[in-house]
Image (cartoon, rainbow, N blue to C red):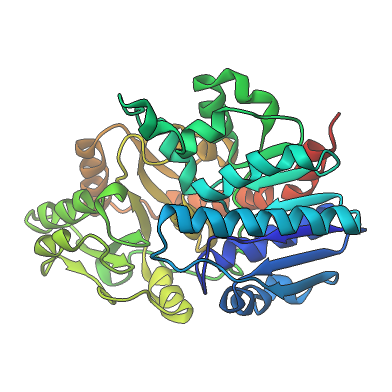
Length: 387
C-alpha cells in the first residue's frame, strides 16, 4: 500500500499535476493500492480527471487543511498532527511508502522531526515551487534561518526520505550547488496529461499569433512579453502580429502595460479548462521571457502546456528549457537575450517559416513520447527501488 497526501493545495490547485502524479505511481507500482488524502474539493478535481478515471486501485479520503491565513505556528501544529497520523497509519497498515505530493516549510519540518520515530517508514516528497527558496541568501540573523525550508531541507537527511524533483536539469542544478544532497533526490519529468494531437494551420490570415501561457506576473517575464508586443506592433512587418496572454493578471502593476497590442481574454480570473484550450489552440508560438533564474529549480507547467498543444517555442535559454531542446530536437528557438527574441519574432513576421514550423510540431509530438506516464513510471520505479 502507498499512502499519498496533499497537505498544501485546496480545490483545483495542482489538481492536474496531482492526478498525473498518482497515475505515475499507480503504473509504477501496479500491485500497490494507493490511498490519497486531500482537501475534499481537491479530491473532487483529482478524481474527476480522465487520467484517474481509467486507473483502478486508487482510493480517496478527505483531509482537513489549515486555513490559508494561518500563522506559521498554527500551520506547523496542524502539519505535525497530520504527518504523525499518516506515519502511524502507514506503520499500522504496513504501507511501503508515504508520498507527499507537495510540501510546505512546515510539512518538511514535521517530517524531519517525526520520521526518526518510525524507522520502518519510507517517505517521498514531491518538490515544486518551494524548492526555489533554497537559492535565497540566508539571513545574517541566525534565528531567522532556524525554521526556513532551506535549513530543514539541507539538514537531518536520511535514506528514509527521498525528494522527487520535476526534471533532470533541476536535479543537476541542485546537486551542483549542494553535492551532499545527491543520495537523497530523484527526478522525473513533470507528469502531465497531454491533449490529443489536432490539426493547426499556422499564420492564418497572414497573421502570426504569439502567446504567453499561464498567469501574467513579472517573475515569469510577463512585463517583457508585454513590452515585446508593444515594440513589435509599432514596427511595420510583412505579416501582421497578434499577441495574447492566455491567463489572468497576477501582478496588478503590469496592468498599465496592457494596451491594444495585447489580447487578454480573462485578466481578472483563471480561464476555464475549455476556454484555456480554445485560446491555446489559436496561438502559433509560445513565448517564454522568464527571468534568468526562474526555472533553475522549478519546473514550468506553461512549457508543458506548449508541448500539449504542439506550440513551437521562442524562449530565453536556461538549463530547464535547454534540457528539453536536447531531448526533443528542433522544437522552436532558444534565444540568449530579449533583443535576440525580438529579432526572431521580426524574422518570422517578415518570412513565416511554414515548412520548419510543421517540422517543429512533429518534433514536439515525437518528443512527447518520452514524457508519457508509462515512461515516467518506469523511471520512477527504477529510481525508488534502486539499491
